Image (cartoon, rainbow, N blue to C red; front, side, top):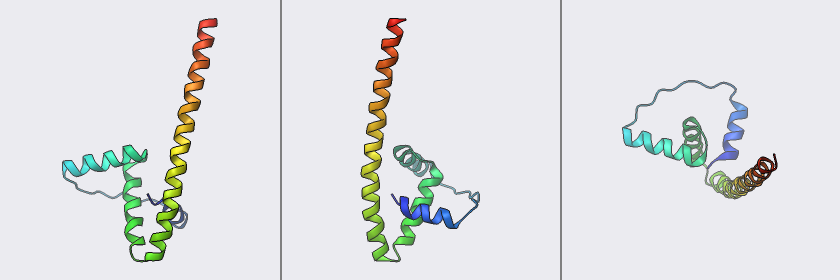
Length: 101
């Protein structure tokens, strides 16, 4: 996903505008599933898609963004894993405190 490009674009554009898009039910489900899997909003998926198409115009930019996105995805997976580990440990602490009380 195009995280760096989106951050740069967001810094340049201050306000958001509402856009209505008509999709077939299957397309809507696919868009919602993509957003759920990425843990972002449907609007964010649309913004990332626009950034992808913009990068298509410049092959070097596309390559650099792809490299950055691989690194960011890898780190995001680590962060999610760390968060899950922290939650697990906090749950254990809570259970021990409940038993002791």
